[in-house]
Image (cartoon, rainbow, N blue to C red; front, top):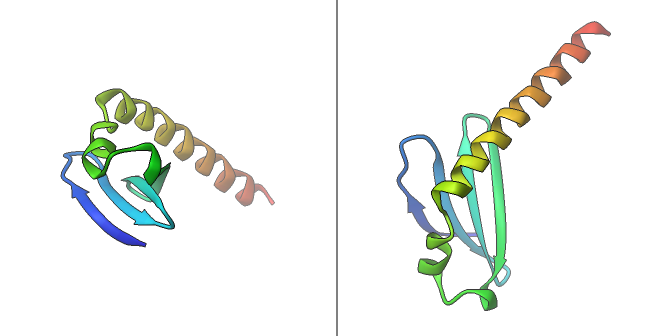
Length: 82
């Protein structure tokens, strides 16, 4: 997997990779990450992929990160009950 672009952001670590004829957008927050894959044939290049990283996408990603943290915390609570 080859790093194509590192996109600066105040909250997230955002990177675009290229692997196996796909672009992979990886968004990280703390110990959690989300990735989105798109075929190279569906976009004209990295710039178009970068334009797909909208405020709406990032806002929805934050909601998923909160859900992920809740799920992970619940898993830890269940582990400690046993």
